Image 1 (spheres, rainbow, N blue to C red):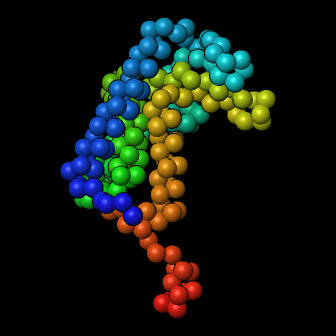
Image 2 (image 1 turned 45 degrees about the vertical axis):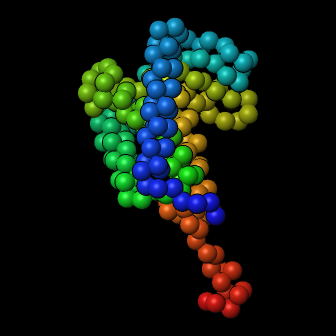
Image 3 (image 1 turned 120 degrees about the horizontal axis):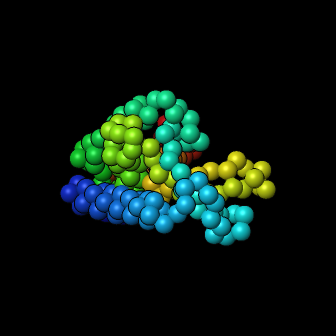
Length: 184
């Protein structure tokens, strides 16, 4: 096991990575808004990747377009939960990285919900990365850099949980190992 971080160091990692992810998301969205035609595909890599600027009032795949304010509140609650976890004792480097990038992604889409048209709490998220992989039997997806951080870090969080890494950096002991050792 690696030496646990001090809570302040873990908090600094979370904050720095959140700011970097938020900045990357907002920068790329602003470039997309300035440079891309609205809802017209721009090929990048054949049929596998296109730029396609659109505004999403809903969640993934535009679900829940009429309840944008709910997504805003959920994003805000998730951001607060990560900050609370950081303050209460994240001491694992892996958790700090995962939570920092996850927080940055959440803040990227939350920024859109709060400050983009059509208005506060109802803003539409700017999406511009299109992977129309119908030829692979997958539904097309249009997303942004924040979404990439959110999805990849949620996978990271799931892996941390499944491998038993705790927020403090310690590892859970496997129950079946304890049974094999005659300790259960």
